[in-house]
Amino acid sequence: MKKNIKLLQGNEACVHGAIYAGMNFFAGYPITPSTEIAEVSSELLPKNKGKFIQMEDEIAGMATTIGAAVAGAKAMTATSGPGFSLKQENIGYACITEIPCVIVNVQRHGPSTGLPTSPGQGDYMQAKWGTHGDHPVIALSPTTVREVFELTVKAFNFSEKYRTPVILLMDEVVGHLREKIEIPEAGELEIVPRKLPKVAPSEYKAYEFTEDLVPPMANFGSGYRYNITGLVHDETGFPTNSTKEAAKLLDRLMAKINNNLDDILIYEEGFAQEAETLFIAFGGIVRSVKEAVATLREQGYNVGYFAPKTVWPFPEQRLQEISKNKKNIFVAEMNLGQMIEPVKLAVEDKNIVKGINKANGEIISPEEIIESFMEVVKCPVK
Image (cartoon, rainbow, N blue to C red; front, side):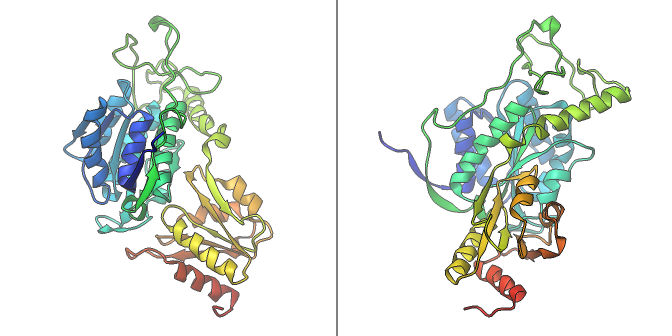
């Protein structure tokens, strides 16, 4: 059988992965460095019986994505830092109303409009805490073009399986990286369909407290009628001021994610368990960390790496396990220190955790990682 091999940018692979997962609707507003996602979606969706619409702004792009998902579409939007900020209110709305959709954020330097064409990773905390109130978040961060494809599929699967918005937290390094990938055959990767109600419309409760804590979702226009509101609501979807119902709703929203961490958490390790020094990174900087680790190991240093692909929820328990007996832990990220905070919460000895940070629109090179390591261990480069 002839293999389907393509040379793709990360942004292009995101669209191919989304269509593989069943995306049939995209709404957004072009913004550097995510623009290619909108461009390729506008080209490929009509060829795959899907719909593309460019909205007047980022707020409308997020709202339209939510509306399409309510009507039964597998829907996605894409943006970068300033647009991600504008989408936050509607992301919070999707969280409490449990509307599955995928939001891609190809990070650039910030704050505000910053350096539009330069890489950054300053939206890590925003992905978790960008909206107000308590709610669960699933955010995935790829390192390679192949991972962009695979994690986009995962993002749609998690979104449908747990009835929640999912963030694909890319960065400009990966978004504009071009690599050869093999597109999987249909059926090779699991595709999770939406869980639809099996009861009659008259018996349907949109937010029923089910055993798996994820209520079936009826598509608008399919004969089921129910209320959707951003207010705290009961099982029928109508607003309530009951403190008991408020606690019940938020507890369920959190538990449907926290009870399934074994399914949701994805990470990559290299020599992490036995290493004396551990490097941690996400997204594009994992590439620099892996090269630095390979160089240091060739020189005889006992080092390893840990790279979360699921960045929220943070894989705290696994890091607790592998961080024992470490002499140093370095967290490399293109910001002034964000992922380092959950790392410190997970590690018993906070004093061994050190940041390797850069926020000037340039990537962190392997040489800079090695230099930071040498400064701490007080050894010259061999």
